[in-house]
Image (tube, rainbow, N blue to C red):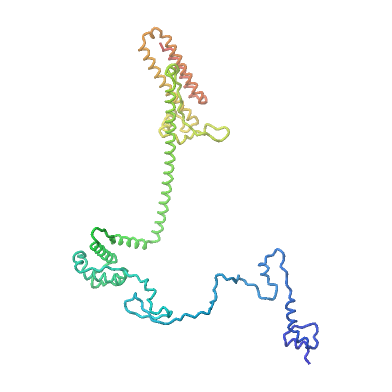
Length: 444
C-alpha cells in the first residue's frame, strides 16, 4: 500500500507534518494547499525613509531578479504594432517603367500600386540638364573664330560639354588629345565661356545689357599652383609659418597697446592745454576788471606758474618726495628745461626740491621782467615831465619804496612755497638783499 510520502513524491508535493496514508481529502485539496503555502511566503515591509526605487532593487524573495536597466512600458517613442483594420488592402503590381531622363530607352521593373499604373516616373522631375548654346556656321565665322582653335575642335568641346553637363574634369578626361592639341582644364573652360559670352552679347536685344560670365583662366592657374605649393609643404615649413603667425599676432597686440597709450597721452596734453588757456583767459579778464590807477600804484606780484600735481587722496601726512615723478600733463619742453637747470646747478636729475627750484627760477624771471618794465616806465616819466627834475629825492624815495615792496613780495613768495633753508636759498636771499641795497645807493 502506497503511503502519503510516496504520493507526494510522485505529485512533487512538499512533505507535511504527518506522513500517514493518503486519503481522498488530501487528493481533492492538494491545489488549495499549494496556493496557501505560496501565499505564506515572507514579505518584508519597506523601512521608513527608504525610497521605493531603492527598496525595489533588494532581492528578498524567490521571484525573478529586478532588471538592471530601466524598461519603457509607456506609449512613447517605441515601435508601434500594426493596427489592422477592416478596410480592403490596396493591390500592388510588378510593372515595367521607363525613366524619361535616359535617352537609351532602357526599361526597368518595380512594385507599384495598381492605381498608379501608366503615370510618369515620379523621380524624373529631379533630372536637371544644362542648356549648352548651339551656334551656326555663319555665327562661328563672324564672331567665334579663333586662330588657336579650329571649328572641329570647338564642336568636339561643345559636344562633350553637352554630354557631361559641364563637368569639365570629365570633359578633360574624355577629350581627344590625340586628334587635337593637348589642352588643360582652364583652356577648355576659357574657350567655352568666351563663346557663351560672345553669343549672349550678339543675340541680346538692342538697348539691353546682358549679364556676361567671364572666366579668368590666369587666376585659376595661379590658384591651383598655390594650392599645390600649400599641399607640398614640409613639416618644418608648417612649423615656421605657425611661428611667424604667432609673432605677427604679438606685434599687432603691441601696436594696439602703443596706439592706446598715444591716445591717452594726447588726451592728457589736450586737457593740459585747455587748463592753461582757461587760466590765461581768467588772468586777462581779471586784468581788464582792475582799474589802471591801481596797477600804477601797486606793483604786480609775480605769480608762480608751478606744476599742478594730482591731489593725494590718501589720509594722513604725505612726503614731498612723492612728487619726484612729474605728472604726465607736463610737456617735453618743460621737462628739458628742468633737466638743463639741474645740469647747470650740478644737482641730480631726481632731487627732492626739484619743483621748488623750478618755481624759484620762474619767480626770479618774472621779477626781473617786472623790474625792467618799471624802470622803463620811470625813465619815460622822467623824460615827459620837467617839474619832476626839481624833486628827485621824492621820486627816488617812491622808487625805492616800490623796489622794497617788490623784494619783500619776492621773499614772501619764497616763504609761501615752504622751502627749507638750503645753502642755495640763503645765497640767493643774501644776493637779493645786497643787490637791493646797492640799488638804493645808486639811485639819484
